[in-house]
Length: 52
Image 1: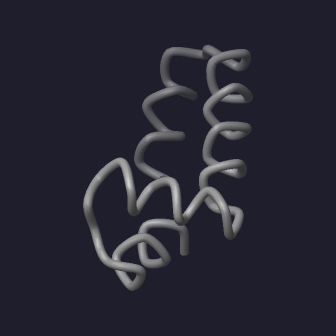
Image 2 (image 1 turned 45 degrees about the vertical axis):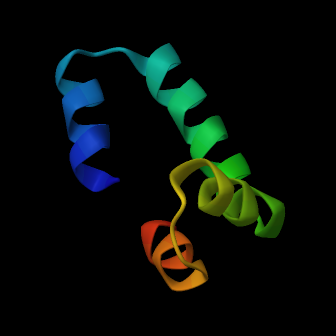
């Protein structure tokens, strides 16, 4: 996530970064992690690892 943020900062796209942050926060809620698992066909462990 940090790497993604750095790219956005370099481009100075604050709005895009905020939007990304919102999506990231939503996906990393408990329901969001389930959604990630479903979308990406990954395990619970992988979904939570992506969010930490």
